[in-house]
Each structure stands twice: as structure tokens, then as C-alpha cells.
Length: 161
Length: 397
Image (cartoon, rainbow over all chains, first blue to last red; front, side):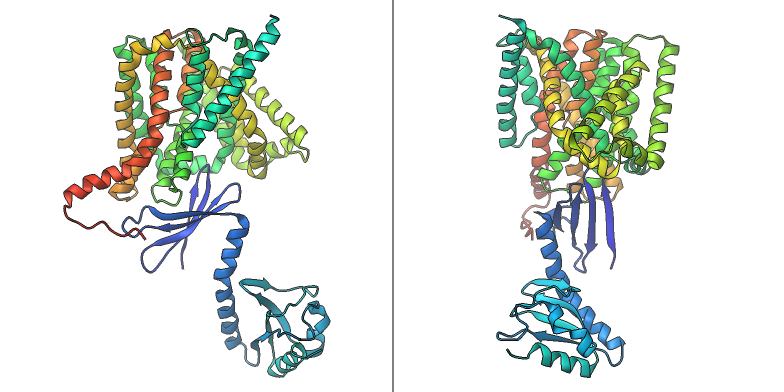
């Protein structure tokens, strides 16, 4: 995949992709940090059908939305490469002993040797969560380890009060 | 009444009125420059009210206004962008120069203003307004368009060309001898080259000297440096404006961004004063006699800009619609044309009518430019539609 980068003197930088359909989709990053999402027109590929201004937060939220599918695909691809290592997603159900408690309380790595690599919370991805990250009901915990380690991890996370 | 009191009241009225004019311009999405000029015309000699007593303040304020205009223009570009722009688009830049200086030169000779007048008018019709064009491109959502880098590259080269043109102009206006003129040009070209090369390698040093965590001391250092450099440049006959422009280029990275943020309100204030002073010194009664020529110049120089953009976009493999958009985007003239006319009128080396013609011309072009940029596309589509009769309009998304 080729990202084409065009400097816009006095304004910022434009980075875009050419899609399989021939359209261009990309982002204009202004000097002051705000971004614009651009999409080229079908009938006039030189021009833009839409250029949507995004605040820094909106842009990063959109990036996460697009990236979360990517992250999960990447994790499952990685798991194929390393024999004996698997990725699991474990849901924090209502009533779980760890809902509302920091991640460090699970002592996951010490007890099972597995690693929690991400939390999926609604549309948000919390990558590489720190031990003080508080778990919530509905969180999907993405966790990597050996088969036995993961089974043990699931038991811990799903234990009831 | 005490003269100071009178000046305060008059200044207050002017700024207050400009504030309303600026708001009005923002509402209808146009540049405030033509409205500031109109404001100046209304308050000047022969206007609605004669505000003579603010002239002293307006004079120095407008001088600072030009320095800040050029300093901020320099801040917008990095030395690298200038060098790359020059390397990639020098042919388009050259065509732009030849095609768009020609109408100004022709009118100057038609009106019998001689070679000096021709040089001044050449600059006035040559320079598109970077400020207006960049704003229009952003407002119309064209930053993602393929022809936009072409348009911006032409603006970059024009601004660089101004850095060479202004010292030549100041030398000629000062009436220095041929040898003296050559020396001035030599000095300025050497300085420009040195600053560009220096900024590429040592820009961070200038930035570090000016950088300060404290807003107040940062602003003072920045303004002090700008006035100092502008003054020294002026003493060397390189023109104050160019000195400021070069300083702006030398400031880089985060410092440049902070500087823009800190200086923007000051620039708006002093630059507004500059446009007002220009209007103040132009007698509205001098406009009707030059109106015909201004209109002619407007039509011809709009056409030459369209040709420039058209050609430049076509060379980059952009389709007809994009070519038309690139051409129309460049039409707007504004601050630079007035800066040039201001220098010329202040020197007294050109006839008074030149100021009237320049004001009228910029009034027309600063208003017509954005309108043309907006409506060129439907116009070309209409024209194409006639050629391909009966073709269904295509879905945009």
C-alpha cells in the first residue's frame, strides 16, 4: 500500500491512498495540528467530494475506529506465526470479581504468564494497558499466552465475587 | 481641541469602523482588504470625513504593518519548501512572471508613466495575493485537490520573486545610478541566497535565540528582531519588507508556529492601518478618470492568470476542470500589489494617478478573485455540458 505524501507550502502536508476503485482518500494535516479528511470525487478525480475538518480528538477517535479492526486482524495473524502462543478475548461480565478494579489486581502475568495487550471498550481501543487501568463491565480483554495460561487467565477474569 | 485628544478620537472611530467592516467581510466570505481600502478612502482627503490628524501615527503603524505582513509570510514557508518549490515549478513561475507583468507594463506605457511606472505596474499585476488565495482554497475545501500543490507552488515562487523584486524597485525608486542599482541588486541577491542556505542548515540557531518560554519576552524579542532586521535591510537599500520576509524564513519549526500565533493579532492591527493609510492618501475623486483602465487591466490580467494556472496544471497531467480551477484560484491580487504601490507613491517617483489606479485595481481583483475561484467550475461544466449534449449529470459521491 502506497501512501503518497504531498507538501502544501504554507498550509501543511497531505497524505493519501489510492483505493482499488481509483479514488483517493487521505488526510490533510494543517500546521496548527487540525486535520481534514478528504475523499476524491468519482467524476472528477482531481477534485474532492468531501473535505471534512476534524479536531485532534475526532481524528484520533476515527483513527482508533479504523485501527481496531486492524489490531485484531494483526493479533490473529501474529498468533499463526508463533506455535504454542494464542490470543484470546475475554469479556468482563457483570458480577465479575475484577469489574471496577485496576488491572494490576489480577496479577495476571505472575499467576498465569500471559500478557494483556489491549482492552476493547465500546468503540475505543486501549492498547498496552498499564497496571493501574481500571477494568469495566463490558470490556473485552485481549490477552496473549500459552493455551494453559489462557485457560487459567479466563478462570481468573470470570471468577465471581 | 488638543491634537492628541483629536487623534485618539479619530483613531478610535477608524478602528471601530474597520472592525465592523471586517466582520461584514467575514460574513459574506471575502477578504477584508478591499473594505479597509474603502474605509481609508472614506476617511481621507476628499472623502466623507477628513481624518488628517492620525497621519503621523498611521504612517509609522503602516510601516510596521508591512514588516509584519512580510514577516508572517516568511514564517509560513520553510526554506526547504522554497527551494523545492523553485526546483519543481520554475517554468510555471517564469511563465507567470512574463504573462502577468506584461499587462501592467502595457498600461503604464499607455498612460505615459515611463519605465519606472512600468516597473511598478508590472509588480502590481504580477503578484497574486497569497493570503486571499490560500484562504479561498481552504474555504472551498480544495486542499485535497490535485491541482492545489500546483497553485501553491506558483505562490511560493511569486513570494520568492518578490524578495528579489522589492530591492530592485526600492533602488530604482530612490533614483540611484545604474551602478548603484546594480550594487543594491547584487547585495540583495547575495543576502537572499545566504539567508536561504543559512536557514536550511542553521535555522534552529535563529529560532533558539528568539525562543523564550515567556510570552511577553518572546513577543518583544521577535518584534525587536523584525524591526532591527528590517531597518538594517532598509539602510542597505534591500527594502525593509524583504528583510522581514527573510527573517521569517530563517525562523523554523515550533518557534515559527508560536511566532505566528503571537504576531497574528498585531499583524491584523497594523496591516489594517497600512491599507487604511493607502486609502487615506488616495483622493476618491481621482478614481473615476482611471476606472476604465482599471477595468481593462482587471479583465486582461485575470485572463493571463487563468492561462498561467491552466498551463501549469496541464503540465502536471491534471484534467480540464482542475486546470480551470487552478487558473481562477490565482486571479486575486491584494496585499502585495498595495505594498508595491505604497512604496512607489511614498517615494514620489510616480504620478498620483498610479495610486488611484492601484487602489481601484486591487478593489476589483480582491473581490472578483474569490468569486471567480468559486464559480469557475459550474461555468466550465456548463460549457462542457453543451459540448456533450444530453449527457446525464453524474453522481458526485
